[in-house]
Length: 140
Length: 296
Image (cartoon, rainbow over all chains, first blue to last red):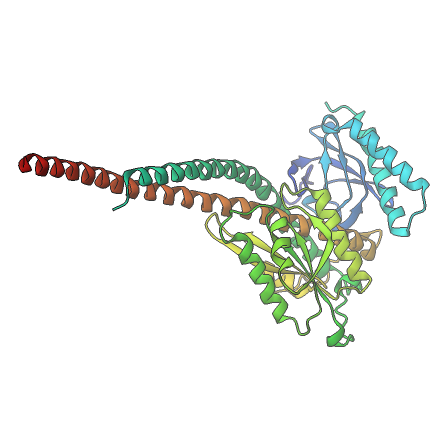
């Protein structure tokens, strides 16, 4: 079957708290610091950082959306392995908590912050935004 | 020969204690189940990260990062080590807490100079080290129960920041590893500076990948590696927390189980004593009556 182009790649999404998703997919879209990237089967060997945000992947012609927090992805010809702090389906997202986190991050960004604190608050704000965005996307 | 009333009173109190230990055993059994679920998720994840890390390291040329900074130039007398100890929040878990603390003391003695700062997670460890002369960071207060990723991130970040500031030159974590349900082992893990050969040893990787299938890094090896390192700190801490918490529950369950069994054994023995004492009392009474009757 060497001459047949693989139609799927194997996606693994793992977090320390659970194994989020595992299975063959046709395409993966991810947010990286450089912008969104799309991964098709047979992608070159690569490692990339993943920023907090939405991600989606196509299973049997259907797109599924999810929220991912910071992590990284390792890609080779046969698989896409994503390791992140948390991964959530749109319906799992706690919208009220995300709103509160957004407010908190905004408040903190108003004050005087050290460089590290600034980065942390920005990241928290970004996470909250992404969560709110993904929570509006319905799967299926 | 003790009086029957005395034995009865003792049996009562042992029975009460047995009820408590039995209840505690049930409680920790259910907590252990939950903790174990957490552990079965984190263990393969943790192996994955190390694997990916190794793959990335072996696919890329020398990566210069502060995590590998061994500070070789520093005077050995001026080095400071930090030890993060993970102990339970409650007692009655057999030798669990003291085993970890003893391992820490041994580690402190292994350090070339006495410059060690102890950071503690869990109340039992705090109480133990209060009585020792070692320097303890009193502001570093974290519980062990129900580990969360957020707490692990905070705990890890403190260590990482202080390492970068060169307040610490070596950072260790001492926790109890759950090798199996019956074998809990106090384990020392070197967190910082990181040593690539350590990973290789742990994962039993001997040969290097051929250099021709180089990996591409997006945006750059350094950027990717920086993200991974930050995550790695959090995830290692989380892994240790979950291991320690599961071990604590397991240790408590075992301790309470044997306490319950001991109480059972004691009750049986006391019951025999009680019957004997009662019989002796009756026999004595009868002897007295017969003695009295024959005297008449």
